[in-house]
Image (cartoon, rainbow, N blue to C red):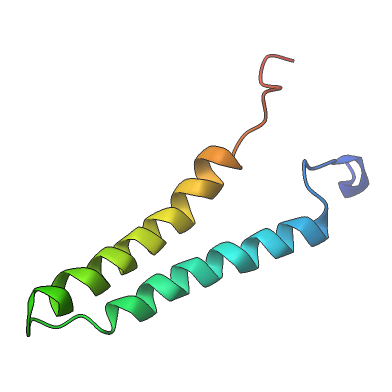
Length: 74
């Protein structure tokens, strides 16, 4: 089977743009966690919440919303 017969759901440019967007979200989550400290409530939970939220969003959106097509039965 040649690689030219494979037809993905997205174009290569669209796949690259989506990867860059969600990788940036993931890196933003890691960067937000760098502000995590135990000085006060705001210093402990705000960066942690933002960081975990961005990291979770960077995985959840591609896997659920952008994940699979509805053509599984075909």
